[in-house]
Image (cartoon, rainbow, N blue to C red; front, side, top):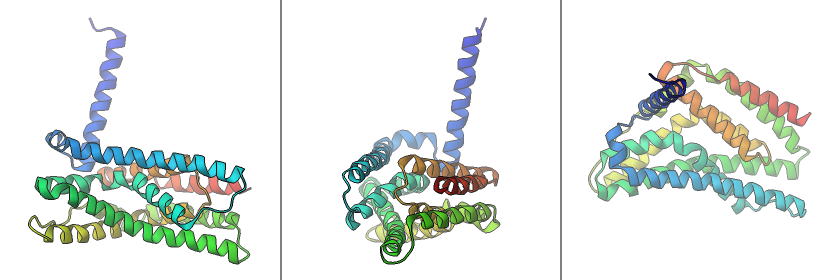
Length: 264
């Protein structure tokens, strides 16, 4: 006779198994490929964890920086922080494309092509976000605009993301962001096609979450906890749109209200 404890354990295992299958479906991962490409996946998991670790360490350094009344962080330090932020937040969004590249190419080209895809994708994000960060810092130092004013603007950006998240154009972009591209399998064309593939994916993903990412960068010295919250909402919203054509973009309105109350 099955005890109540065993029944709970079985129910929990079924929930975990069902959730894993849903994740595999969303990422277009076949179970057999997980074992075949295990070392590649572990490499990117380590990169993902290292990115979050560097963000946490940056938070700690910034706290010490402010406590000792030092000046603002250098441009290179800001750029490096943004790069770690992009890798930490966007690697899960790239997962399905990395799986597709791994499945499409032989061992010789597999890892270099995957790294090229990540590099191109990250550099495109970095180019946009570092310009936003520079413009915010420049406006604060040169004009009568404060970081508090920028936080209000960021709140407006998140509020608009609530409306944009329910728009049919955005839902189509989310599905296109996950669509597979064309990858050549021979010679130098492997890498040129992979670069073009990453550009197309980034363009669709920028339509999807560019407003959110730009608004987040407008918030001065946002915490790791804030980035984790934004990442969780992006992933959950993306997953629901792809699988059920539903959106939870109303959460961006709560984020906007939270930023306003934080200033008041």
